[in-house]
Length: 201
Length: 93
Image (cartoon, rainbow over all chains, first blue to last red; front, top):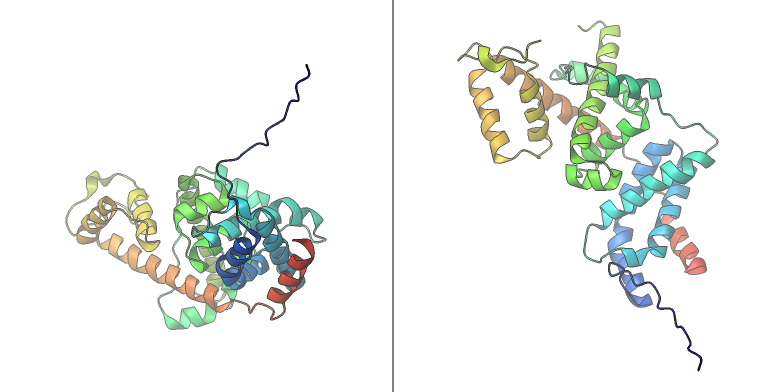
């Protein structure tokens, strides 16, 4: 007597068994409304329109491919941002002709320094000061290392909570807090230097 | 730059305008992440320490300004991007 061994497919209880129609509906109603935010995030990571388009396209294609891992009605924006961030770090940055703008010296200094908790203030309450320094904000932000730039964008532009940011970045909430604090300190330090160069003290 | 709050006394500040605990609480308040305990602690500082009030006002206006500037820098998504994605999806799905 012979027995036929039939192997059972691996069933992941978390994976959803959506029909093609459901997949398209989720894609159109839950994923596509975030295309503006996704493109802005991609542009702020790549600094290039074509590269940003490619990154967003790539992210949406991946999102559709892995749509069974997404539970409809949950936080689609955070899920998409996580895919985009991972695509940028893992795939895109390696392929990019331009080297990633990661200032390891800057990151290392801030993560290892005993002064990581020090705080930097810059008084931007006066309108004159805001007008003079306003144009420099973009330069200061763009010159931050990518880890610091990402937390500023996620929090200050997209309004993600610490918990959402922790999930997008795969880091503990405490690290989100400290990284955000350090990112803003770096930004203020750069703006402070610029203000001083203009004659403000 | 002291971190000792034992010097705190009414109207004289908490011993440092860079008090670590207050700085952390201010970040949580401004990011909308503060718990009730954080808010209570914040008001304790706020009521007793002039330097803390000044720090909060400066930090609050700085973050608000940075958010405004970053928001202004938003770029417009290319009009054809959504269609390009759908076309590619039609080919690969």
